[in-house]
Image 1 (tube, helix red, strand yellow):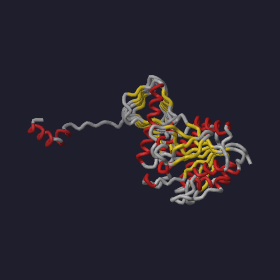
Image 2: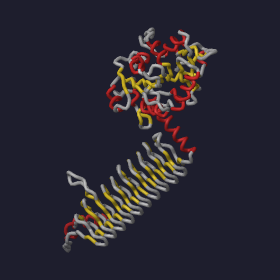
Image 3: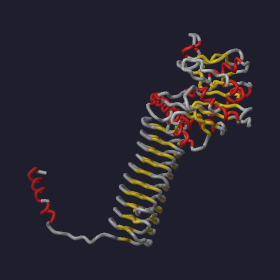
Image 4: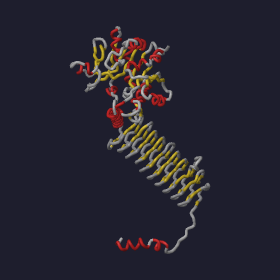
Length: 467
């Protein structure tokens, strides 16, 4: 047995009102499942011993966790107390310690609240400490009834008196329990309610009646009580999280012209002086430097962007864009790209798994894949690196200061030397030496009068119409 602290996350909610087969804790807030928000709050409080209680469609949660944390299955939805009973064997391994009980669909619990509530719980030697919040509108929540020494209980909305309904301190649904005392109380739970369910809140009354101390920690984060029962509630959570990040970025010197369609992952970092325009979705571990212009209509995921970069209608994933680059509109950077300083990429360009050297220019309607491009290169419009032969992919190398003419096809594996030149319309299948010119155009043949004859009727119609 270990006296170290642990956590049990209740994630068995079906979410019928979501109109989905997805377990409710797996619905996303800013691109991450609500369950992941709760897990990260625990990890941020240095808690690594977690057990997730699953229920409806439990395979989805188990696959998502991928063995990171232990799970137990609640075969029937018989209340929060019954869900914790399912984790009793897990709890017994940590007798002598404390357990944090959390709801997997209440994503805004934070690490600081977890730490400070544990400090209060241990300092006062409580059997149970309820994490609470004070809100302006407590309607619908259980009210905390305080006494001279700790709390006397929790009264639900339907059971509260007129005076009790005026109380603004409410139950978040998160608790610290002494594990040994919790297990004793779980053994005394009875489904003595109209739902015939085992309520975890009843253990608080049991512990108080046994003479143990119960208290409440008021979180400074009033959003810690928020959850979602339906799609409207989920939208509210997303907006709440979104504006919290926007307000933080504003305080850090980031500029917003308009916040319509703007969304961020909570790990995103953006430097001061950067402007975020409409319709930008920035997520993952993205870090953007100072004095950039991002947008409109950019999707950026897990990217590092330097200072003074302009991204206009760019989709970029798992890539790096160095300082001074100007990219877009309508450009896709697929995973594995490194874009050098001062690079210019025009419209309708796709770059994939490629290194682009400093001060290189890539014109519109071009595909650069699996390539290493030097510095100072000019790539004309309509260029394609032919990197796939149907079985394997090969790389293209382009040296410094090379000039790749319009509509050039570079059939990999192929190397274009430094300051080499490809003529427009050339298909290159062999390495080109430094400073050389490669031409691959077919012989041209001019047939006099062909156009006049072929287009005679069209020309006549144009004359009659006066066009």
